[in-house]
Image (cartoon, rainbow, N blue to C red; front, top):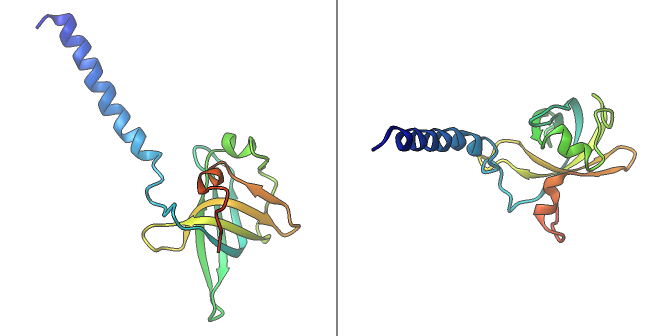
Length: 137
């Protein structure tokens, strides 16, 4: 094998190895995309960040205690293209989150739609993948 062919093969192998972790990083496999749920919560923090935004909330449980949960979304770029902003919610705001739950059963998930206390509805870029007839409960 000539040195130039070895160089090309090595470069191809390196590119394949480098792409595998990047592909796994952007997987949505940790969420059950076949389920659509809804929860009313109080915002604890809104991480408007890339590569992923997070809504940290407190959810009242039936026994009166509070449970903390995190909901992941896409990047600032993806969200801002669909009308979201850093100023749309603040700690203490009551919101309704429509989401795909985590596959491992923990509270939290991939947010699809957020409805703020004033009734404004923000639809995230992943919501279209839930289908036009998706029902969030």
